View 1 (cartoon, rainbow over the protein chains, first blue to last red):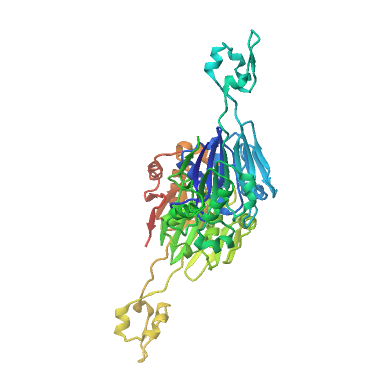
View 2 (cartoon, each protein chain N blue to C red):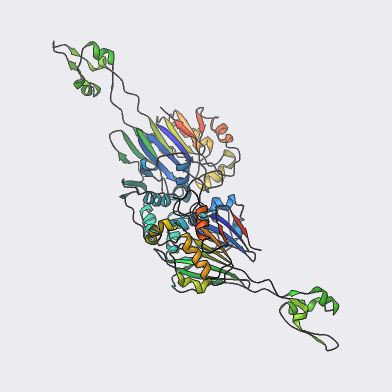
Length: 302
Length: 302
């Protein structure tokens, strides 16, 4: 699992900082999370293969989280994309995108599917054989979801030494990986636990931006390996955080602590702060394992 | 008159090139022309004072000419803009912008006026005491206008030596600048032509992007000082130019020649070309005074 931060600053794109967008590579799936203005340029700068993105998740319809989406959809057209593209986002996103395509008299050569969200309870919005994605309902000024990306438990790993010792043929390997015991020709049953190792523990990534401090998300993100939690303000601006329905660094850390997260990543800094290290310092008064997101930063969780 | 090219490449923003946007400073007015994705960042990079822009002119509703507009409008909100903002652009632009503001539950603290265009003949869309702006109806795949910016003829300049020679009091200066003759106390009439010099010749700038070769624009732009004319393709791709309703460098030059333009600026290059010098070479086979636009380039016409 690998996370690339394309942008992690609040409100408005600047010369050196970008609004929210991330690419999560999980089990060879490439998910784009939020798509602020300039995301397509950030994708290029970070050498992300555009065409591998088939699912885009939009947290909410504030500009710093989706104004780059229509441009990316248009660029996919120009690049002659053929593969289906799925957009998961709040109700309204389809109307906004299609209106712009209509006025530009443009038609995507690929199928463009909108999966509009309006539920206020966590729901599964994507699932295949390896990954599951659930919403994390957040509390912000408009309808907002975070997203929980979970790897599914994989196949068991063959214990090659044991398998060879019993001369088991390769045609049985898949059954063994699936957890089956093996009966040898002489009638001996070899239990699966002897022939295999546990699969790697599945990882999970929770993306929460933007939201005010909200303990109701804890059961949803409980025990996640990584939590990206917005922290627009420091405690010195707690009043502004409350007024604009954002979180402080301390609040983000408290959520990480209560949800038993392994690794907290902070982002969505207000551009009023020149020194983002202060966010880390404030969070670490509550929760030790904190890293600051920054544009172009990559986290490899393998 | 000063022109700053924020972006002049076709189709899609890239790491090093930007879609169409320009700032024209004319008689202390600051006009933004087109607003592709990333324009607000380009404004910052080129140190343009955001707040001085009160009028934005959008040629057409293809993304590379206006996807940055909603972000700029939002940033003006965040910057707590109070001054009126006027958007001149094709019918539909109001619906597109307001739909996005509606879903983000945002309200501008300033008055936002939309002046939607649908005429197919040239019309005056802005006029004050110093500047006039007219549309240049263009032929493209969707409804498109170029814009002709004309300085109005200014006041006559005082000939200080002559004025002092006749001991004319300062309270008459404005009348003299306005072209009036002066009668001295002894009854002598001093004709205005003796007291003044001609004002500087008013300048004009014609912006034409995007369009196929179209001689019907010639009477509108005739004798303009500067013509920015798109040239997406070279003659080697004339078939693509025709199919997509764009111009070649040679065609842009032919328009400049026929319209008796003083200075031709080329831009809107297809990103397929690595060497944009070829556009200049091709245009100069027809018209000598050609300059290539490039992102961040400034033209000072004073």
